[in-house]
Length: 317
Image (cartoon, rainbow, N blue to C red; front, side):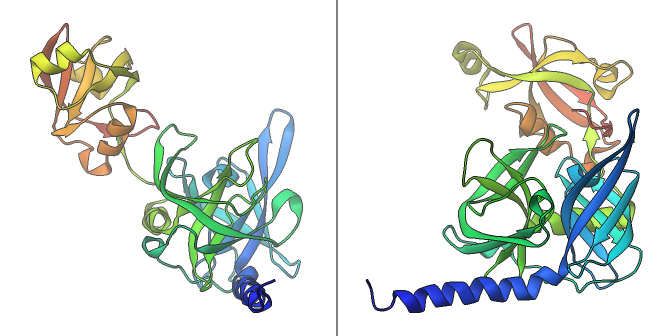
């Protein structure tokens, strides 16, 4: 046994315990109620206070369409809370406590993370309050598909164990600063869990606190990714080898008004390549709402260009 091993283990233990002591008072158990035909359905998740006046960051899938929220502090005290806004496209939400009841965490800088770095996850899995797991950053820059169908970029992969109820809890670096929001695990795999980068969270929470939502644009089409024939790519001088095949167009949508039709293949929008639905989602930002935008497509073997004016998103493409 390496004579330095006990010292290394002690240092590891101190790092984890210091993080827990610093952050756990800010982590809440969120008990939610959702009305349905069967009555009020109960659920739970995690969240953490990130402002002195009681704003709480959590996952959208924890609090979306709920009728009631109660937060339980680490000392067992409960506080009423209300939903400020949520964004299913990034699986983030902001809740506000009826009164300030816990200290805020300190937000870190996910851009400085390195693969192999120690991280600690704190949450309330399966109803067990303030459960702590530790691990390392397994990978950076992952993408994860949200419940809305859009891809979430810059996702952190970790091997810190997560279970149902961990959703919305903080992922914390060894310096005690929060660098992610725990959001998902891959079942039945073990040691593969994901957190939304705190950089994404900073951007989204600012919009949610200001407007209660995140504005995006949409065209109103249903489609799927499709590979293009090499001969078509070569003869038309395309910059992409795949595109978005239009399977349907919503009536009275921006796409229908622009003349987009079933069977068209979208290959570009606003001068940016569209290799499939994810490229289109990334390009349909809030700035394009109401703005005339050039749409490049293939129709019956020919390259055409239409002008489309995107509307504000109703959670469609």
